[in-house]
Length: 279
View (cartoon, rainbow, N blue to C red):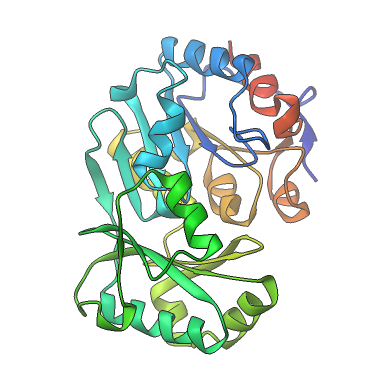
């Protein structure tokens, strides 16, 4: 059971890095960042703390928000694709990547189609790959700001490097896809639900937690010097592996059970309310 943010004893000198999920955490439900949250993040960076945005989105999908906060983007980082890519935001340099080959993407596409779902995917070579403009893939196109290519997934080159694959469709169809997923695909991908209509296959069994550990190593920081804040299933590993894991008030019950601290919801400035204690 997580503690309330007001009662948790906080060692302000210990923490050097703040890792934030986006949707349902940094972003309010209307997909905006509150002025209070922007001010806190800017003040923390001015104090020398490293800021990391951890998300299923691609770097361009992070930039559309990070650029509005007024941060020093050369010293702001992003763990993208739910953990399989780590980037600096200012110059878009890829610091580390985990990919799987296109031949496995073909298998996931066939599995999704068998159960009436669509897919889209992120390629290291060609950015966002879509098969059509179904409502779910169109939402990805609109929100990611990524270049996209319409492809026949059956014709993807076997060696094309893929960060992640997303099966999309109605919840019951995705339940069927997940239930039918063969074990050998689970050995190559972390499979998790990131929305009722998104089932993600993340290369190399990467998670936001593995991305956080990789970034800490690159920055010569210890995981215990990191605070991670999230709300959903795909945040569980980063909240578990950080020195201090924080659950939003709107988080799943499973994440609240893992986190040390519970703050307010994303619509109540939960990120700002907790992080103001570091100032």
